[in-house]
Length: 350
Image (cartoon, rainbow, N blue to C red; front, side, top):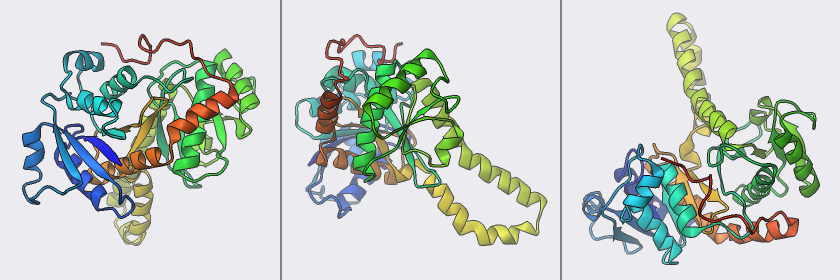
């Protein structure tokens, strides 16, 4: 299995992307793995000077341009055809590799993937998800930014695709799906929420109804469905929780010296909780609904996060999740084959 990694993507590239790729190649769970590092060849080779010769399953594919995290996604895709993102996605499009992983500009990865690869047949809008730790292990939230506005059909498809992802990535036989809303009653929320509730109830036997924000960390469901505006606010808030709590704890300890002994004894517990909230543990998430495996990682990805993102890509390919999405959408007859494939509000503007 060949996976292309955007070597220039992320705050710590190419050091983190190269190191993370080497960690993945050393992982016994992926004996069939080959990695193609795409990016500026000299920069990549500079990170490999301590391990000559090049590992036989590691390859370099030159791309002369890079996309910064602050660049306009559409302008970058249009004016930088030789960027590591564009070249990597095109390698996937031409079937030279099986998956693409990037910690670079999310909008550029999304736009390039959508324009070059298109949608899985029947998918109305692709979606980006995120993992949230919960009291019962964890859940995934779809959407967290690809679709600031969503129609009932979109939310239904997010639930279907999220269920498939949860079932295959986390081995949950029948993941519980909940629609994020302002109340549990089926009549709560906007017209979109009310209509989406009806569609989810009709099509998914694993839909348990509306959930509220407090239900997420409590582990009431395995898949949370919402539009990308709400999901992104939720994601950014969630990312801040553990750091804010730890800062409050440190502040209290400074004011209560005798409490430091108890804090020392609790340190292993706090470290364990902190690791559950860490993006490193889960690496990256796929852009579900795209006709190819495109994995988006956190911009601050460390080598460990890159390795785990490659692991997600490996699982997506091995378990043929995209094929499952297409077949299940056909079963539910909730496809939208007439939707335009290029002029799409999903594509970030600017």
